[in-house]
Length: 449
Figure 1 (cartoon, one colour):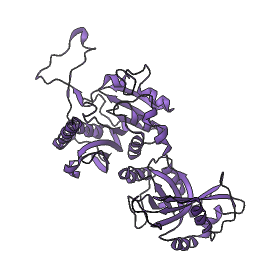
Figure 2 (tube, one colour):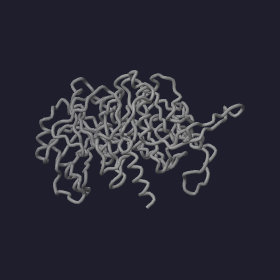
Figure 3 (cartoon, rainbow, N blue to C red):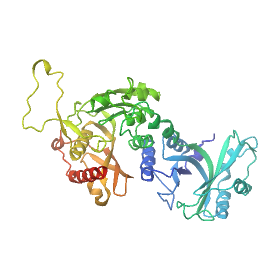
Figure 4 (cartoon, rainbow, N blue to C red):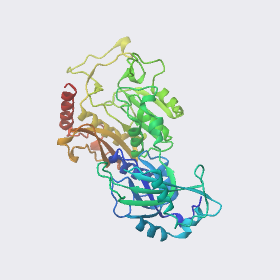
């Protein structure tokens, strides 16, 4: 494959999956940041379009994105584009021949695919479109089964399935570079996972969170509300060492009632470690422990390269912490001290996010990221409701709609400075708690009919 310096700064086309639209741009930007590159779209960039044309990248950069992305389907070296086939022809004929020729040599084999977004073409129509490209100087032999080079004609018919035009809005032609990791969504589906719970994170969203956090090989990743470990599974897939904690003893130890249909109790080997073993990443598993997120047990140091979590919202999973509502609680003493299990009390969502941001400011390595979900009530939502911290910079804020008036937002933050004395311990407080309590109250009313 030719990868000379002359090919290092060509234009490339990304074909994006048309789901999780709000998560695509932060994912691609994060994966580019891992390579020290910026997101540079060409003119007329449309974020909601399934096709993005990018500048300033090398083929190696593009392959690096495709090796991680679950939002991108495929990537191409862009040879030509236009609003009509006539414009496409002009664009292709103006493309430097020295960039084309290494892939059109006489003894090479190739195949041309036709892809249409939002429209289905008959086989005969596809063949006609391929035949219409006879002005390109292909000298090799067509091989449909195992070609050395694959090319693609891509037509964009818009995003409205109820208003499909006769002719495409835009057309692209390019050389296939690689496919994204959409297969991970299927292979890691929660439906087929060994150990699951009521709120196990969807596989696709788990990988998106890992990418937003820029999780990479040999990172140490922590989830303070680990549950059944879906986020640990995703991060370990990218070569990170993973650990977590949760206040729920039964979940951590894989005991109690099963969340599976037609299964009353969990089996003897249903636990987080078994999940990683299922996907061949058990060697990346550090450990998990029963712990109260409001009372961190970690030493005061930058320990983690990423903190990724889905805090409990109190609808399907209760929000609890250790403590008592009484003014004074009688301490356990004597022989029972070591085995004493403290009583629990409500853990308000405002306190959860306050503690989470404070914990991340102290325990994240400088320049690394916190990624978490924030529930919101859509009619009342504004960006001012997102919790902030003086040591953490907001990187992205992406919405997943849950209903007409509820959603949750995936918040990505990056540590930009070490905490000062006035922000030590739990000194920082978030004052947007009433918003989240309002959300929770309305959702509970809904769930109760």
